[in-house]
View 1 (cartoon, rainbow, N blue to C red):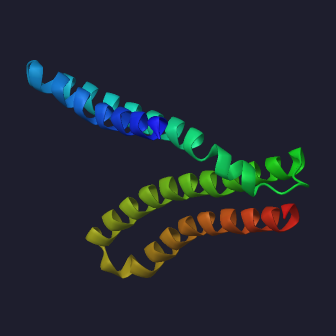
View 2 (view 1 turned 180 degrees about the vertical axis):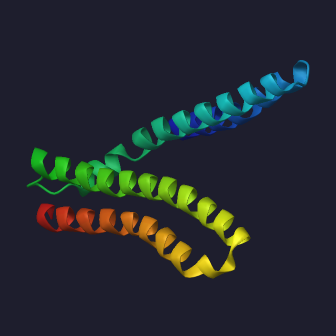
Length: 140
C-alpha cells in the first residue's frame, strides 16, 4: 500500500515539478522545451518503473511452469516485429502521404496511384503483425 502511495506521489510530482520550474522563471521557448522534455521523460520513466514493481508479483503468478528462455525470447521477438514494423510503416506513410497530397494538389487524376503507394506503406505494419503471429504460434 505504501509503494502504491509513493508511486502516485512520484507520478504527480513528475507532472507538477516541471510546470513549477517553467512558471518560476522567464517564459521563453527553450525553457518550455526543457519543461516538456523533462515532464515526458520523468513521467514515463516513473510510470514504467512503478508498473514493473506493482505488477511483478502478478506476472510471476501467471507464468507457466514450463516457461523457458526460448519462449521469453520469442515473445520479445514478436514485440520487436510489431513495434519496428509499425514505426517503419508510420515513417513510410508520413513520407508517401505528404508526397501524394502534393501530387494531388497539382493533378487530381493521380489519386488512384497515390492511394496505392500509401496503402503499400501501411502494408508494412500488416507484415509485422503476420510475422509476430507466426512467432507467437510457435512459442505458445
